[in-house]
Amino acid sequence: MTARCSWATTPELIAYHDQIWGRPTTDDQALFKALSLEIMQGGLSWETVLKKADDFDAAYDGFDYQKIARYDRYKYQGLLQDSRLIRNRRKIQAIIHNAQVLVDLLDEGEGFSDYVWDLIETAKDQEDSPEALSQAVVKSMKKDGFTYIGPTTMTAFLQAIGAYNPHEAGCDLA
Image (cartoon, rainbow, N blue to C red):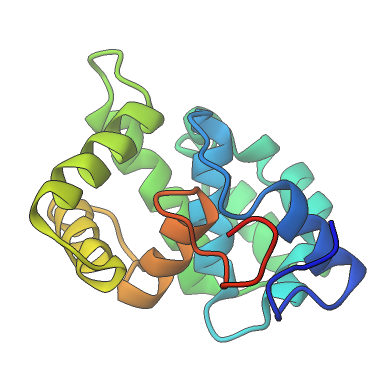
């Protein structure tokens, strides 16, 4: 690849840009991981989060939301004390809470992928801009009980999972 988005300037960012960002995925764990990492990123650089990605995977059981939903106070305290991670109480609580919401929502056998992409497709039918799409998805997810998600986090999440092509003009992936 010769031309990339302007933000892909370090090895971590280049690898993320080239291999993950903006590519549609239907893998439940990959989607939950993307949402969780976007929550963790709030107020920090994306590169900071990417440098800790392997540590997040290990600490959060590969972002298996079924397992995360069962975390107890001991696991929560362990996450708060793990120096490899971003140790923000509200962000950690949000990831655990969102996993619990997912488990409750998806009891009928539907996966996170079905849930997310159904929301996106419904919102796309009504909204004509990425910003409006983000607002509509946030509204639906908050109504369903998700926390620590707002328009900025949701825009980043939707870009990451390929809900629309977020690449800059001139990027080989645009």
